[in-house]
Structures are given as C-alpha cells and as structure tokens.
Amino acid sequence: MPRPRFLDPTDRGLSQLGQEILPVLYRHRLLSAGQLTQLLRPAATSTRYIRRQLEVLHGRGLVDASVRRTSRAGELLWYTTALGCEVVESGGELAPRAYRMTEDAAASQLQEHTLAVNDMGLAFVQHARRLGDECGPLDWDPEVAHRVRDGDSRLGDEAFLVPDSVLRYIHTTPTGDGGQQRMLLTFFCEIDRATMSIARLAAKLHAYARYARYTPQPALGRGRPKAGGYRREAWRARYPSFPRILLVLDGASDAQLAKRTDDLRALVAADARLQPAADLQAGVTTLEQLRAHGPFAPIVTPVLGDPEPTDVLLRPSATAAPAA
Image 1 (cartoon, rainbow, N blue to C red):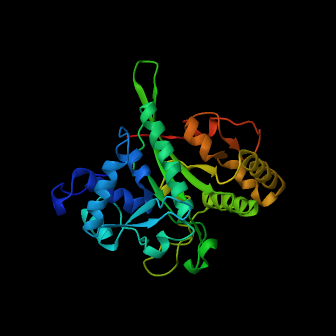
Image 2 (image 1 turned 90 degrees about the vertical axis):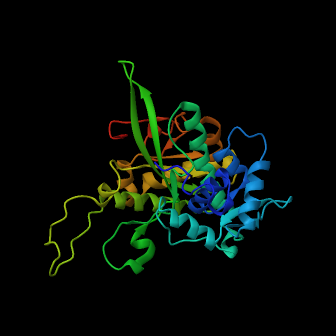
Image 3 (image 1 turned 60 degrees about the horizontal axis):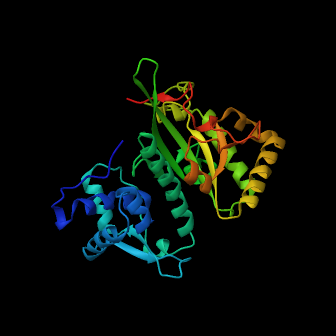
C-alpha cells in the first residue's frame, strides 16, 4: 500500500512534510489542518506546523483553501490546485484521477460530506495505529466507479456503482505458533449525514448486490471474445474477495440515527428486490461509534438478520484475503 512520500524533498524547496501533504490532499480532495495533523503528525499537540507547511504550499501555488461553511471562526479547508495535481501526478505513484477540486466545489454544500468521508478514513487509520495494523493516509480512495450493467455508459447511476470510499486495511492477528496472520480487508463505505432518504440507502444496497453478481458480457465481432466467453464476476478482477459494505451514519442525534437504522432494516426485510443484499456482509454504524471504539468493536448493526450490534462484519473471516 502506498505511503505519502513521492517527491524529492528538495523539489520546489519543500520540506518532507510538505511533500507528504500534497498527495494526501490530492487523494482526499478536501481536508482541514486538524485532519492532516492527525493523519501525518499524530503526536503533534497543535496544528501549527501543518498550517505553516500549508502556507508554504499555498505560496507556491500548489494548494488553496476555502472557508468552512459551518465554521464561525473561519476554519480553512485545503485542496490541491491544478498545479499541485500536476506535481503529484508527475511523481507516478498515485493513479491520476479525472476529478479535480475547484474553488467552487471546495466552497459548495458538499464540504461536510467530504470531511465526513475523510473522518471515517481517519478513524480507521487511528485504530490501526493502536492495534498495530496497517491502514495509512492513502489507504482509502473516494468515489471509485464500478460497472454494474452492460450497455451505454451514459446510463449513469444505472450503469455504475460509485461508493463514497473504498478502504483497504491489513489486520494482524497472532497465531498459535507465536507467529502472525495478516489479512487484507476491503470495505465499500457509504457516508450518510441524515440527508439521504432511506429508500435511496436501500437502493445503494441493491446496487451492491447487483455488482456482486455482475458478469460482463463479451462484445461480438472480429477480435472480440465469443459469446459466453466470460465466466467470472467483474469484482474478481479488482478484489481478492468481495468487500464488506459499511454504512456510516452521521449528522443527527443518536436517537434519530438509530431510527434510520431501524427503518433501513425494515425496508430491506420487506422488499423482495433487496433480498440479494442478504448475501452481502453489510452493516450500519455511526461515525461517532467508529471514532470512539474502532472498526473491530461490536458497533455494527447487520442490515438483515439479528438486530444486535456485532463486530462480525468487520472481523477477519474465512473469505478475507491474506495479505502479501
């Protein structure tokens, strides 16, 4: 898994920390100085040093900032400029992304959603440090498109599944012979800040179930595979096992989020079209619980079945892939 050290520390006169900040901002689109400090300098007692590096990067035209809409104190949220994106992409260590943050996008109503996605990733990173596992500042990737239907790509939501984030985590457990077993766990993560309808959340689960079964159909013609040439689901080309699905709720009181969880479970249980979700490892928790207790605590309510919160959905299982 890549770590955020890509460029020569002397390039453009930046410090090593400045070199680390750029790819993290590029990958995660919009971050506060506090989030960057927790990701890159967790032992720091203030954000002063990170903010100083951000000012240097800003002076070189590599990053810019927007004022957080919900902040009375004028908190700044940081993102890479077009030049900053080009610098990161020239390093060749991160796959280039078509999406680039703009001034308008950074100031839009999507601020809090983007920050919540990154808070989710940060919670995994912090608990990985505590447990001796591996999950670093670049180990989640926002909005990765997955085709779920053959045909015209202009079908948009009908043709593609786009999780809020795909997160990879290596969990280490002791073995009986004194050694260790390392398991790669992959998560499809969705963040809902109490702005999405329950029906839409259920539709997301339906899309995940469709992706779990989707087998691309071969195109016919010269140089193309013959009909029936594909026998494997599309996800197998990207993942060693089908990712766990984690719905993370935020943006409302505990009582309201508990009600949303109950409503989602009731809708899934009552709708026959959503029953394919029963084959998935899918569960619901809150961002507050994830921060406080970590990914391996009994904080996840299964989408189907027993409503008792459990840790089973996030624990290594027989289907989890061994890490190299």
